[in-house]
Length: 103
Image (tube, rainbow, N blue to C red):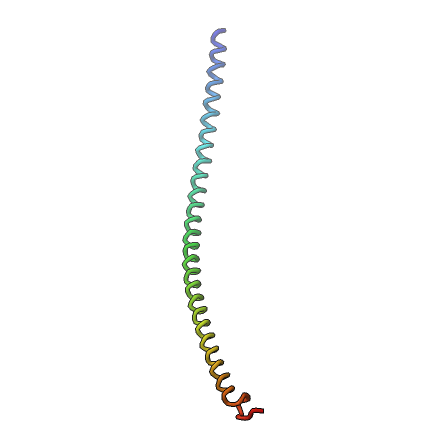
């Protein structure tokens, strides 16, 4: 009868080893799936990083362009104001209404 408990114990150990091996196999499969998913996310993140870098460059170019447009508009405004002032002074010298008549 001493043999029966020993066999029973060995059966339990074998069963635990089988369960552990199965669990380790499932864990390894899940880990492989996780690794593949992480690789996919990393690849997508790299693509997004490239797009963001490209957009950042585009925003920089647009900023430079608009700064130039604004500078040109300010220069044009100053030129137009000077021309309007010159015309106004000319009209004032001519008598006010541009026809040479004062009244």
